Length: 285
Image 1 (cartoon, rainbow, N blue to C red):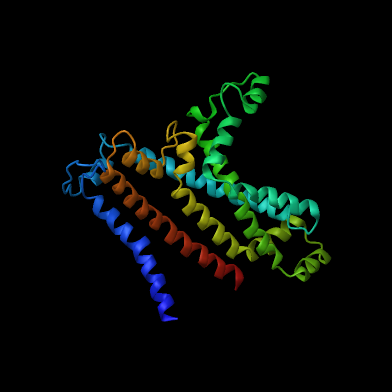
Image 2: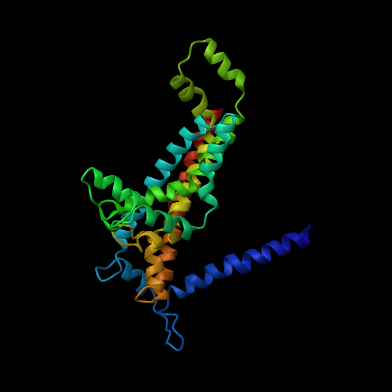
């Protein structure tokens, strides 16, 4: 048993702790990643650059990150909750629809991004044909007005199946006798959901909210494919990627952004987890 734990800890240190520590060290340098380029200790200059007007737009990226995280978390959980209620049955149609809803999560990010770009191509696409019939024309992913909402929709679409399955699993564990008693008492469906279903789904809500928040905070690859961080979609994940591998190729600055992103994620996820767990205890006791 101890040998298995030791091997697991070794892998965790090698592939988890060591890269994180190296990333923190790089954030204090001017390392560019280019072969033969000089590297020196830069102190806190990378971090101070994030907060200056000459920096890569940290404040706007933080704002766009908040919009993205809140939008994804709310929409994903609300839609998944509705689908879970509609598709929790044992019928064949419900089973097929569950598979279809879960299918996007098994697709690669590149495939998802390309499919949505083709669907919303501003020159010739099904979306342009539909909107054009009503006299509406848009650049979609190339517009400041529509890029962020569309990116949120794509993120939700890809991860909706997982959230829905968690909610369905929670609904399946609820004893039918409670609902039978509520029906005999003449409780309305909305009252039944608010007073019975919603409180008993508290653990599933905790899991889904935390997964949605953490997942959207660290998303960059999907945004890179859809917009390359332009048109109001330059989240902190995209800022880190473009700082490190974009035109500036400043790995030190990119590493500093990822450290800040880690701090932001911890400052959001830890209090949120505490609040959600407190909510569980209050509702279930």
